[in-house]
Image (tube, rainbow, N blue to C red):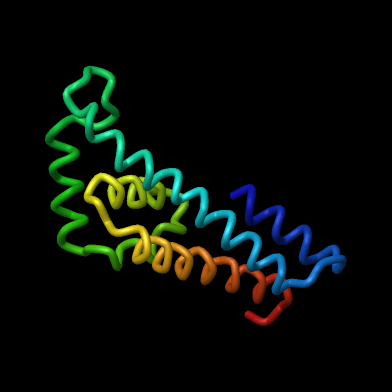
Length: 123
């Protein structure tokens, strides 16, 4: 929730263009999700290690979930709980980067647009 608090503070300061703030926040947050996607692409090689963060049964369950809802679940990557897991799982399941970027950006930008509209009293 830090990015939301900072965005609200900067919007309320009136010193910056809301559009520019929305673009920067959305791009920055999307790039953070790319880190998760990259980790997901590489971490699968370590699935047999003791320290691997997900037991095989939980990883299999997550893969079934992602295959059911597919890339469209990336629109929920903005969620504070579970959003990062979706982006890591997309990497594990080799979601193509262009589709990943587009859907994650849309989800994260939509969150910030709603937040900005509420901050300006439009909602």
